[in-house]
Image 1 (tube, rainbow, N blue to C red):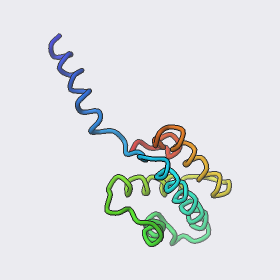
Image 2 (cartoon, rainbow, N blue to C red; image 1 turned 180 degrees about the vertical axis):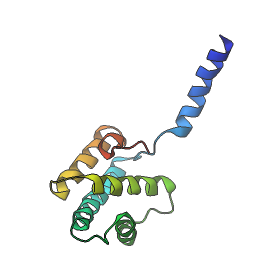
Image 3 (cartoon, rainbow, N blue to C red; image 1 turned 120 degrees about the horizontal axis):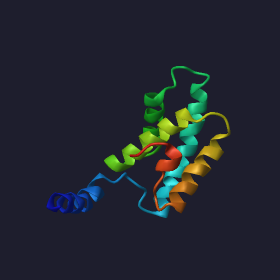
Length: 118
């Protein structure tokens, strides 16, 4: 019994440390909305140009946006690019709207729309 109580208590301590990175403000959600728009547009180009893969898209994004050396921001950007590459059909604006709306509605949590746990 004591072992279960200890494991339960440990879960409350460890869970916040393992939480997925999230946007921390509405302003940040707008930032990711914009990144999603550009990422999806570039991913659509990847369908026509095989050299336009994940790394090339991330390189282009790094010229446009700065993650400020924040690993959380960089991880979210990678997840957005990967989701944009998996997306099939529809305009880039639709993808960006889903990412932005999920971010705003779920207090920064975009896992559902990105299809991954960050």
